Length: 228
Picture 1 (spheres, rainbow, N blue to C red):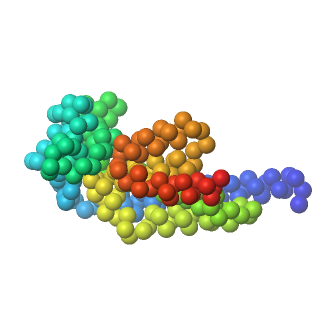
Picture 2: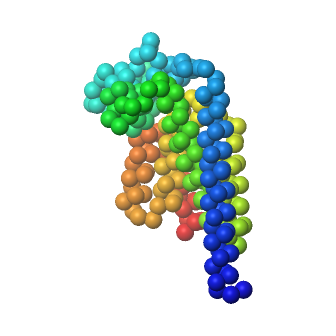
């Protein structure tokens, strides 16, 4: 094969990779988004009621408390030192919920007219898809191959297994479980990152998102060692 033919074949492969990756991304979004849009359920359910329900009114999420109060409270809006506290200190997750829940005062989000609960769930879907891509792109690093099609197939299989895993349904559909998605997302970013400042930033955001970030440390160190 000449150099020109080799370059043409490589270009065709890259286009195929791009198309397949785009289709998988659309699938990952639609598989969660379609049920959410057609469920006609725009009310908070289960743990969501303790966060974004207008009746229970979590002050940290609804924006009626100060930033210092957010830092002193647990995820459910109770003082972290209280006996009734869940001891789940997740200020970044709370502030993200707070920002999206008050779209009327949220800068570039003022044009959004959908109900906050639906916006919150769509953000979960997007975060889950990004996490799935990080899982997929990590797979060929753990299981390397010189064949580009084998590498891409490994990436796509890992992406699909993560996206379609039934255990993820509640995590994605229920807004209250977003901290766990954020923690996993940040854990994967620390593995992928090559700059120390990016690793520190991702790890810090993860710790401020969910305490499960601490328990993921052994897996992060092991995976990073294998990859590198």
